[in-house]
Amino acid sequence: MKDVFIYDAIRSARTKAKPSGGLHELTPSALLKPLYRALTSRNQLDPNLIAEVILGCVTQYGEQAANVAKTSVLYAGWPESVAGLTVHRFCSSSVDAIALAGLKIATGQSSAMVAGGIEMMSRVPMLSDHARVFNDPDYALAHQMLLMGSGADLIATRLGVSREACDAVAHQSQQRAAQAQREGRFKSIIAIETSRGWIDRDECVRGTLTPKQLAALPPAFAALGAAGADQVQLEQFPELTAIQHVHTAGNSPAMCDAAALVLMGDEHLGKTLGIEPKAQLVSSTTAGAEPLEVVSGCVAAAQKLLHEQQRSAHSIELFEIHEAFAATIVKARHTLEIEPDKLNVNGGVIALGHPMGATGAIMTGTLIDELQRQQLSSGIVAASGAAGSGSALLLERC
Image 1 (cartoon, one colour):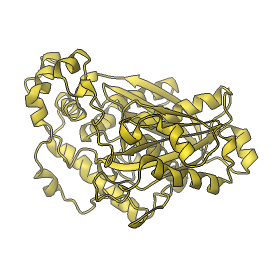
Image 2: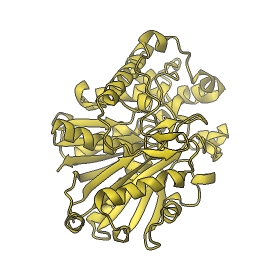
Image 3: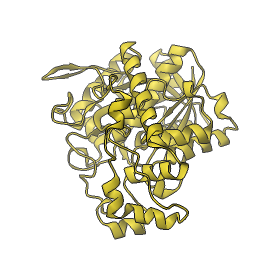
């Protein structure tokens, strides 16, 4: 098996998933095009060297349908020889894209790959693909599929996580993200030109948000519970008497637009390009957890990865874990026994935004940048999909 290296990780800014958002005017391919160009210019990369582009994308509908990985490569002017594959494991999709690219490199199928993700939620909104499991309650029940917010409230209820604890997670995420912005820590952002000017700053961060303002927000998923989600969960967990609806718009992920790309290859690629790798992809894994918790898969995947590598959380220096609602982070802290100063040190998707198919690749770039900034050695990226699925990566700084 060959060693797998990450040579570059870049992304767009994360902008609000609204017509007023900074990237809204761009189609998915139009957003990816300058990232492909940046990847080539930064690394003196001949695109003919790339065997395949693998992108995560969740809502594969409209402009994001028809294998956006391949069509975006052609739109960007890359050679027809570059294959394209679009993968979907909900919000862990681009973690899986990186893992799959890594496996192809490790087994010698490819010497150079690009992985990443795209989600333009202002143009292709979440659930606009009309998946039956999210629209037909009986069908959803048969497949143990609930919407993410309902799963997060179940996690909080089972663990006894209070509304105050969830709001504290959100407040810390906002504070850390605002500090990271002020200090210019997000080195992987590539400025994108639009008719409004150059977009190079994450838009969703609300560093001035106070605990009092968070506490004033109403529960976001009580109506889903009343519509039947609570009953399904209570039947599955009869020891519970009620579902506590502790998640709000303030302690849930912020929807946004963004894309990210990661240049990966074997040792030969670095020698060919005359560049040094930034990190080594040591291992990857996937896991499944309680499906009705929906978004706890990131915890299960990180736990499985540590077990497979015979490591403890104490031996890992940084964690980028998908803030798939605040209760998920509380569960990660307790289950994995992660020290607070190791977890999402630059904020998470509650503050920075969650472009579903691109989130994992963005977190990967953030982790690599932070390992370099602090001169640390190892880190884990973990993200949840729906129905309890999750995926994780173990990286070591080169």
